[in-house]
Structure formats: structure tokens, C-alpha cells
Length: 179
Image (tube, rainbow, N blue to C red; front, side, top):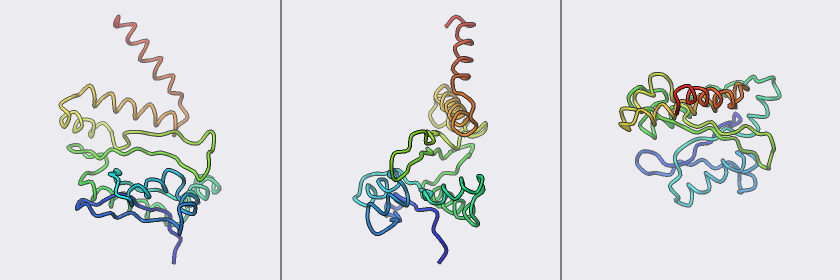
């Protein structure tokens, strides 16, 4: 059997728990899916209302990093399969211009690791989907602020562009407008 790289957690659209447990014990699950991944699966399994999602294994992330940021064979297909499953369970699609699915990307490891990746919120927002969020919430300011936060977090965490640059630009614009 091929190595499993992704585990889902939470419930499907009918309320059925579809959580996949990594390992035979909580300790083993934490080694495979990290503390956050194992705890989300455990919470779903005891019936807590955990938002549906999926976890990429710690071993997969280590293999990616060790190979010069190249995914192991087949991993991107597996992640795509789990993304589609999540979209089906949520009844929404990432980037949809009418009813966007927004997800949080969080890092987790079996033990504390200073300097690990920070959270990226609102993955799924783009120039089109922000319009759908504005319509859904009837609050364009909220939608565009969410989009700004996504861009700022993604830039900082993924691209290495300091979030302070965004804060400085906002402060300068506010000062220019006298706000």
C-alpha cells in the first residue's frame, strides 16, 4: 500500500463523521499529523463541532523540505483529492466568485518548534471571490479587509515579505487622508 500523506477530519454534508485517524494511539497520531491535526481528529471523533478539513502529515512536510521544496511523487494528486472532498463536504469551492470556501492553513508538529510557519487565514480569497464574500455578508469593508489580511499573511509567511510593510503603507494612507 502506498504511503498515506493526507488525513481528513470532521463531518460530511449529512453530519457523518468522516475523520481518518492516523496511527493506533493519540501519541502516534501526533507524530504523524502533528499536535493540531491529531487534536482536531480526536475532537471530531468525540463529537465536537470541528470545521471540516484535512491534515498533511509531518513526514510529508519533512520530505518536501528535505528534497529542496519538491513534493514526493503523488502527493499533489492526493492533496487535490482531499481539497475536492473538502469542497464537497462544505458545498463550496475555493476561489468561487459567488460562494467562496475560505480555509485556514496552520502548521503543527509533534513537539514545539520555534520559528514554524505562522497561520494563513482566508485562503480562497482572490479578486473574484472577494466579490462573492462582499455580497454574502452585505459588508464590502469586511470582505476587502479579510482579503487584505490574507494577502498580508500570505506575503509574510509564504513569500517572506514583512507584514510591517503593509502596516506602514496603511498608516501612511490614513495619515494622508487625515484619519
